[in-house]
Amino acid sequence: MPAEPSFPPIRRLGSDDLQRCVALSVDRGWSPERSKWSLLLAASEVFGVDAPDGRGLAGAVVLTRWASDYAAVGMMLVAARYGRRGLGRGLMGHVLRAAGDGATVTLFATDMGRPLYEKLGFVAVRRNVSFVGRFRAPSSTGGAAGAGGTRGRGGARGPGGARGGSGAAGAGGAPGAGAGGVRAAVAADLPAILDLDRAAFGADRGHILTRLHGIADRIVVAEADGAPGPGIAGYAAAWRNTPVSTVIGPLVAPDGETARRLVTALAADAATPVRLDLDPDRTELPGWAHAHGLEPASRTAVMAHGPLAERGTPGLLYTPISVALA
Image (cartoon, helix red, strand yellow):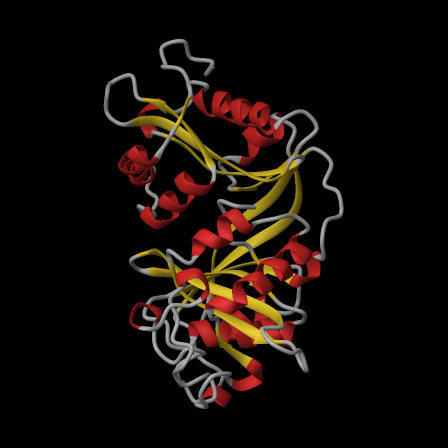
């Protein structure tokens, strides 16, 4: 229960609460993020408190489970008129209990939220910088369309219905695979994408990834050299977080060169500014992203509550699905 006794009990939110969640984001000056909220309400556990004045939600928070002992927290929001009344602490306590004893919980913390998380026992484990802007394609692409050739909303369906134009021109103008073996994903790639992601992340994100196709503009894959059938070495998704921003994430690749090709395939003809959430202490992408038109826009810290065991192969993970899903 929240510390403030005048608040109603915390409850599990569902699809009927979508508009309330969107309104709560707007109340705090965030973008509406309708697509993200739809995804989280369908695939994660969203908790909220109804506003005592009857005007929507007083607060909300999202718990996404990756394994029995591993989860992520995101979208921790309290309506401006109910700030500093203990509601944020109450919601965080609720999701930590819901995650279970001994579970490691991670999140992306802003400077505003970090003091609360530190009081609750979270520890910063790395930095994150959001690079945002109009992407300038490397000259080798000639500014051509990325893998898939056309923007996803007009293209053929990719894995599980993901938007993409697998038969159109690739990043180098050739049919199918683009330059460097990057091409639009097709339905047959989905098992390989899930296997690759599980090996890289160290836990199963399939319940999110299989729904991501519903909001993704495009998903592209980097073919594995010499691999028969749908063998892939990396993949990335681009999805419209807001009407004016395209997030590229997740991005999984075996090396920086492949990661850059995947980003270029998705960002070269993006209709909106592109966002990449990157670890600034890694050398592969931040400087390159900045050189191609993306500016540092905001900084957060990735924090963990509980022991952060070594999982998967972190070096293969270049961007998260979303900062709501640490």
